[in-house]
Length: 300
Ligand SMILES: [Zn+2]
Image (tube, rainbow, N blue to C red; front, side, top):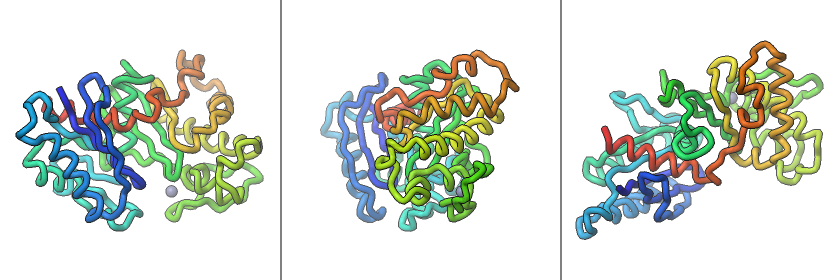
């Protein structure tokens, strides 16, 4: 069975065809411009995958979209499938699902946030396979979190926005924070742009400066401690450009244990190396999650 998958990001749109085993059989990347520039190319790609001249088994059966947010993921809502008040102004209130549904002729479409998509990919084929409670946090230009609880993606009133939880400043750090809404929230203190503004250089030029990563790990560990105490996940997966600095992982694990301070004792915390872990699907977790979203939409 073939499925269409769209990983909609702020800089690129990845369109792909995959199968029920999560194999990616075809993939193109389209730079993200305005909706007027970008959507016709996406529509053209997926239209060519449902063309009636193709043999039936070569046509995709549904489309899954893992989209940058915030987005409306509440089924039954009037604005379901829309991008909401994103800082990417041309995309604000853009009806992503409706546009593709109209273009593809009332086609089954699954839709979730990019981070819930990545987590779904990891929970289906990657390092969270078989787990019912897990979280995925991407730390890059922004910070986003996806969560599954009891096997279901967490949505609620919107969807988790754990990149904006408020953190206590580390003593001695007087940086004002990068978030226009909160200043010193998780994203404001620990995103890629926050590192660059605080230290005057992008993170990848600071790889050898241990002071940078000590401080970064303390903020990430503070956020992870709050999140794990609230959501009680069986695994925390960390991805995104900042987490390409692999020296962060041991530091984050050390500070999480320090901040939890033996208050809870679980096998997950005793096996901290597999509890706090990098993504396992080599950057394909988002598009593979979109394949899974399509499969779930086809079943509905
Ligand atoms: Zn914020």
